[in-house]
Image 1: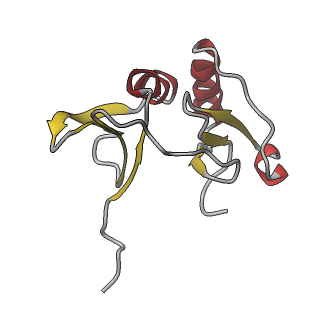
Image 2: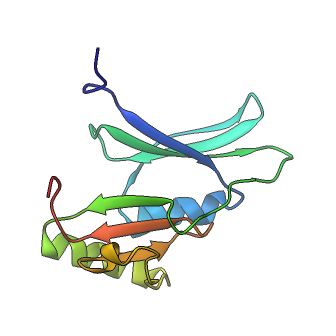
Length: 132
């Protein structure tokens, strides 16, 4: 058995649901695929692209602050081989007031830019194709 046909969902908590959602929807052009309120005490949003095999889920537990802590090596990397698509994504993030930050690992600065979401978690927009 393999996981080749699986859909990957990366889930994490946030204390800034509206800001984080705007960052990924307006900045990265992800779609709001689903949302829920007070599901066993949790609120959340699921973001992604229709028919893509990945989702990002952001949750908050009612009455409890998020304990998620960013680390400079915890990254979401988006490979964007098309230069125009890459530049458009960079410009959308900059229009939201996001500025690139130096990557902890200089490899990511060679053909990409690193940004921090409102919680301080990092994403890399890599102007390259995968697999390399």
